[in-house]
Image (cartoon, rainbow, N blue to C red; front, top):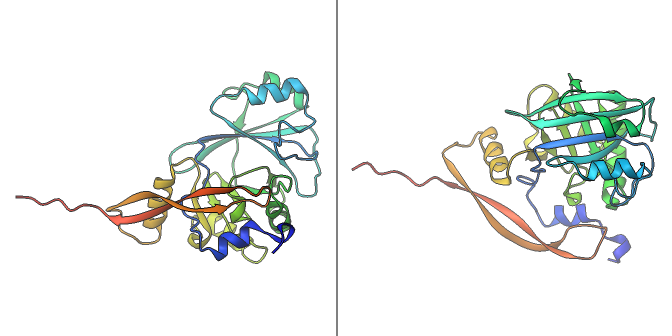
Length: 261
């Protein structure tokens, strides 16, 4: 197989790499509408005004991602969503700004309103990884046909090798190995309050250990377990470079019994 033929999602699937515990651990996100071209470093390589890029880069404790409608249609204005981990999910607030420069004066605590309803955020940044574009764009097209207002393309969610990947808000459930055949049913299950366990990477905003524990319990397992983080094999994780990187595995083991004397 040549380098041009390599697809990281195929390698991960063929290696039997588990999905559980691989969702983003970030507890706060800021999604900024930007329909222009996305580079590998999406914000830094965008054509946003330099002052805006500097402002976004300087935000503390917030993961900034660009979003756009499927097909690259934008506006009017700039839509933003701020999502903060809260309880069993995220509190999501939103605003529609007149232009990107308005981000400079946006107060994330005061200037947004509560957002009701779902958001389906599918990674489609092909400059970051080919799998994200080749798989991500068709699945967001399928979602947009069903949920046109709720569906957005977004930049890097991590784990290109699990493409197609998607972050569902407000639940925070992060999915992987999505296809055009399973994505609508998977999101409909989340919308109905369930979790497609065979496609779940875990709930964003939590540690990998906590993600795995929750999925174990949701799958009918006993909560009386320990989850152990272990080093996994070294694999090529991206179509975007040739580097081999360490992976992580999680093992669910019974909790030590307590003997009462």
